[in-house]
Length: 38
Image 1: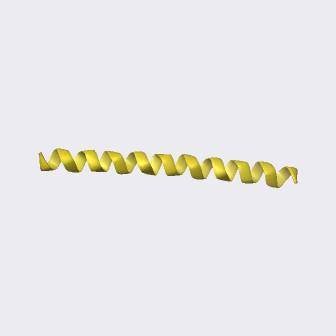
Image 2: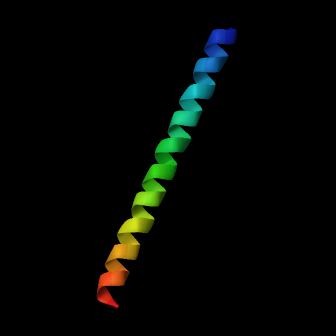
């Protein structure tokens, strides 16, 4: 049970990291796009 719980926590952390990376990537894309058009 303890191992299974740790695996689910790690999975959740990995999903959060992927979400943050996608968010940062989108922010950088928007910044480059608007920065070049200004």
